[in-house]
Length: 86
Image 1 (cartoon, rainbow, N blue to C red):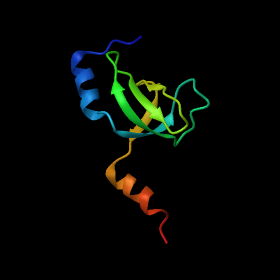
Image 2: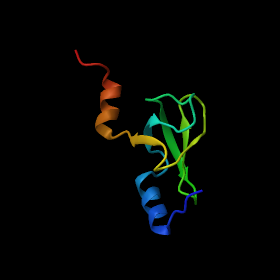
Image 3: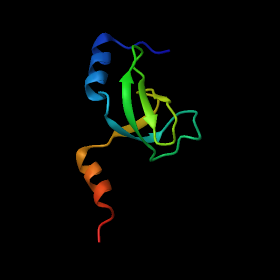
């Protein structure tokens, strides 16, 4: 397991507080976790793993630097609620 400094841990917890919405780009070694899957962060553990409740019911954690994902920013959320452009 990789080492995470206290400074890195603090930054992760600030960037991904509880309730942050994320979108998966790729999860290493997890074929059932499809690209584009969305989830909500519920905490960042002491190892720096970001624990997410995924829309498929899974509770798998993201590992920064291994898994690929991005935060769903407010503009992206707004587009999802509005639906497709006409």
